Image 1 (spheres, rainbow, N blue to C red):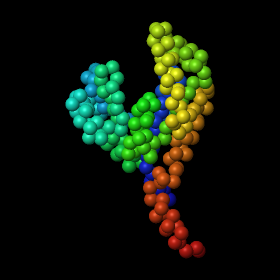
Image 2 (image 1 turned 45 degrees about the horizontal axis):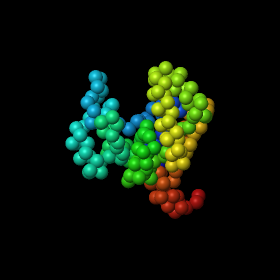
Image 3 (image 1 turned 90 degrees about the vertical axis):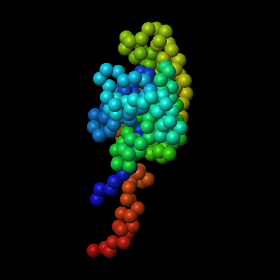
Length: 212
């Protein structure tokens, strides 16, 4: 008999260059039904961006009202614009048994874990094998000037200092092995007793069965 379950809120965090985005793609290739959460933002839509698919575009007044009304799981200001995760779509997915993936930093993770949906969270922090390797990856991208890379490295140290706040920590020294471990974590977390909907009544009915 197949029992239903509540969806998992998967928080994936890491310093820039540790491989988080690649691991997230591996996870979504493994389960195409896994979806990234869609953030709300006060910045203007860019060409090609679709409401509800890329972002929920809101005015600053609407955004503040959502925060004050408890409608955001987490929010932050970035370069003069506000970004946040609306509660309603995440909660609906969770109740329908669908998992949601969050690409947030440690501050966003703290807010989500402290929310009313915190018990449904599984948080995973991805570490690089070394800071030397992390810097090499950032340089190899060829996207940033030396001073930008230096700033990213300094930020990385601050982010890594919060590793102990997470449920799981992966050292991404081998991408294939890390992806397999990430899949194993989610597979196990989906089977947790407290995520199984209807498990109590099923077991009670089982215990009341008469043997053949």
